[in-house]
Image (cartoon, rainbow over all chains, first blue to last red; front, top):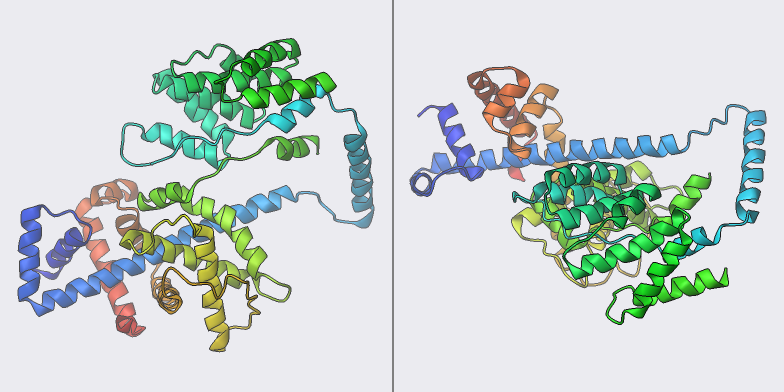
Length: 245
Length: 200
């Protein structure tokens, strides 16, 4: 066997691609040959070197991506003092307006009551649910436009329909697309009672954002009267806040 | 401005648990690294970056700590624990390595000693510091390789692509990819002898 063939064989052993018989034979060869043992150790070290070096380069790419995003966030161009002063003044006026403007009651209640659903555990292994998990990872990373697209695709394929519809609506909410979230939840009828309760609660909140206060109040009253509803207390608090406003 | 403010008001983000991150890293999902970078690096900066300290050095150490974590998850040395968060594990590894580097005069960095610093470790801090030192040396040798070899070997050993997949990407014949890979490994072997990496 030439060097290249040995190297291939060691690769197969190190990457766990041998059959049980091949592995047993290879391990017996190792026992008998000091040279082969040394080659194995050497290749193991080189493999580690490649893994470490490649991961480092991926982390550098992540770092550059974050730096770029941070810079994009700071796109205000302070090239000269007069521009800077104008911008500061405009921001000041904008902020004053923002702080003093009357905030609609619906928005206030939504802001104080909305908490994103934490999502489902993501396993990301080679299962049939890989695509669902993949979308869930985007959702949990806060990449709501990506998760929306993926959950939409899944909903067309009718995969895990109840969970998919729910997290599609959650992605819309995360992305502040309240109308789409409202419409998705309005026709949501899952079999699972827990999902149904969650759907009702988020529909009540989404309704506030699309100026359907009466519908939201009716739903909140219904939720607050159900002793086994997981959002019973929150619904009561939301109603109180709406009454005060 | 309005949309930014309303975004921060409404967005109470969900997050990954250490168990989920553990599994994602085990399964080679690179977004776990992105998530750790996004969430834990600011924590490390808050704990260890004071005026006068080099932020790039901290970043570099932090990246190495993520690599060490990945190795330890793969080897089974790192297990998720209820009372020890993954982020704390990373930060303490960086903190100790910086402390060792400062002690040996290799770098100038004022390492803030948080109250966690002397708390008992899950694993031996010297061992982890040695692991980070090894990671630095391995990188320094790998970086001597040309980009072509780096990419080919990375695709095969790290991304676990098959020779046929790499052939399809590069437009080469599978046999040529095999020969090229062998040539790159020989080059890496010679570099590691040159840098006396075998003694690690």
